[in-house]
Length: 164
Image (tube, rainbow, N blue to C red; front, side, top):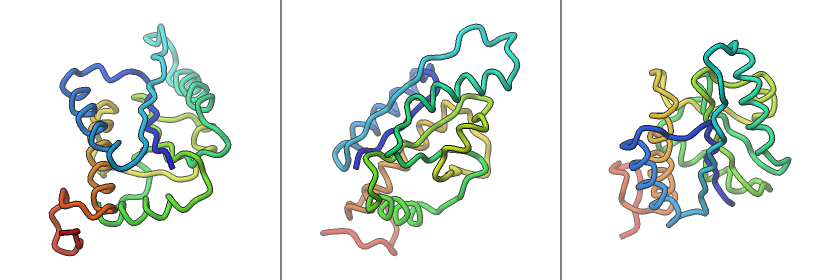
């Protein structure tokens, strides 16, 4: 099953983008992986927040297929330890879906229509991070949980059995 990270807008911070590229190159050793960056909205300075979320929501929903399992990266989502996240993701691999689609919203979050389409929501932390930084944190954690699933020693935890 392919894993996709769907982003609203480009990653503009060079250091964050380099980190994402680094982890993306590692992720593809374990699973088909793609990052899709939707176009930034134009002229949002005077646009009401609700309208921004709705327009971003339309772009997101146009990128989602009916056979995708959609997970929103959202502060109201379920929190996991890294080990729990690995077990949860491994279970999702058994679903009859073509893609697991992780979605980051813009700086204002998601529209109600996007929330309505979501199959699940995942919180990266109780802390608040910029939507740019969440991209880096997510790719690192995705690499980490895939290494756990495959039994590689990237994650240092004595409760996880690694292949020797």
